Length: 110
Image (cartoon, rainbow, N blue to C red; front, top):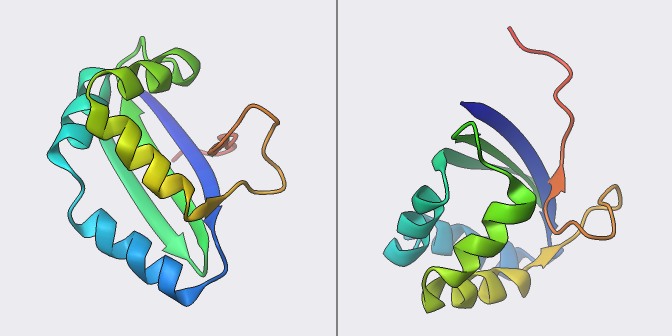
């Protein structure tokens, strides 16, 4: 198993934040099924202000650069979901040019 932590921000709008939270109380079945199909065993998203923090536990062979694009092809609802979420998200300043969600460096584990 591998662990990942990633971050992104929501747009600075209380209605956007509320809407984003509502969507995540009822994530579409096609999305969760497809995330599992590419090797994500567990995913959690936390919110502070407008900053999102996501943790994932994945299979040993999971590679975000390969498997997130694959996830988008598994069902049309996955692309629809991501396009909808994109309307509410903003890259963090620390993100690399190719990153949507910025990959965080693990610096401690108990």
